[in-house]
Image (cartoon, rainbow, N blue to C red; front, side):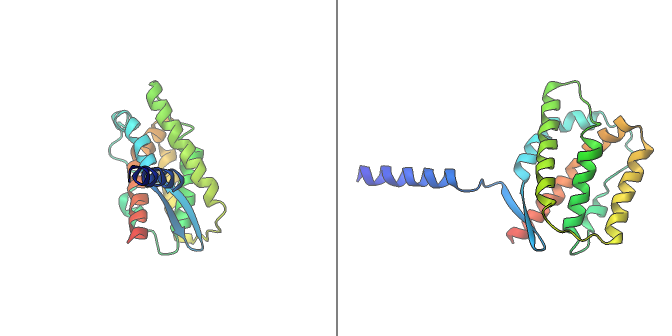
Length: 175
């Protein structure tokens, strides 16, 4: 009996090691899917969130309005995600600076995760409609209105909005 119990526990452990982590979800974007570890992204963001928010002095301007993200048209999720990832990878992470090593590690981990998702989404063939491109263009326009360091700080502070959107996409898939 002990041998059977031990073998069963070993088998369960082995299966849990071989299976995909619980926080990994495949976002289905049309005919393509991308693995996004929202729990991991949230963990990295939580290490920098208070520092990022404390450094955002321009409360009156929002780059990423929640309504902008929530109103992404059906069939445009792939395109919008690809363009948001591009914005963060090319404009935000490279211009965000923190003097604290822990915040630097957290932002680097986020940047690397975004690069990884971006690499996967490039395999997808996302069709972008004009309205989706206009949404991203408005984010870029607001970004360049600010000094680049302050703009990056603001975009990092608003990363919560992006993460909530991604978590919402994961919840839709699970339903």
